[in-house]
Length: 227
Image 1 (tube, one colour):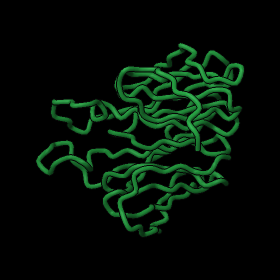
Image 2 (cartoon, one colour):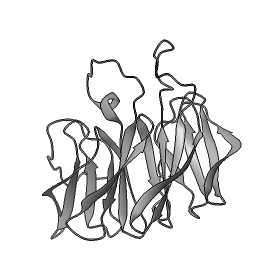
Image 3 (tube, one colour):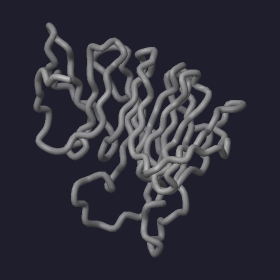
Image 4 (cartoon, one colour):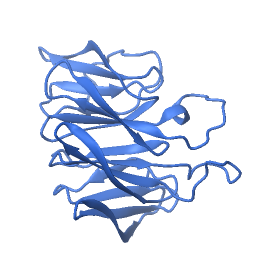
């Protein structure tokens, strides 16, 4: 691997980054400065387009649909900001839906999800979005927002909008999430339990298979192969 170039797009921490499927753009989450930066490939060189897309607080992970139409960004809220001093109570956070089918790209919808959605993914067939939220499972026992488990939320993409379908419990302080290549299954990282949780979409809803893959450590980042 060889470093070809570097680009300065912010003075503070960045988070997730993802190529669009035509290979002409990169979306980068500006975790501390907020929003998403758009990089363009111009004459063989990557440049900052100057475009910034609206998100929720502390954008974190990014995924782009295989059909080149949509991108989603998880916004982990105040918990994702550097050195935040206040007490966090498990408030709801958000996922942002971005239309990347034409330039300039635009954020078109903000979706409510449980607190700290560290993982988000779009199915390869472009029909589903899943968000994995910690939902207070990382909080201290005396915090009124504490919960035993996180939540995985399923949204259906229909007529240019995302609609919530259902959500189900997952692990404690869970992390990344991906779809299988056939868009019928979802893998979630259970950080505390040292497991991968296996879910499926059945009759239009997300279902926990109750099957687990044991790991030697706490998984914290997950991507699938390019589709």
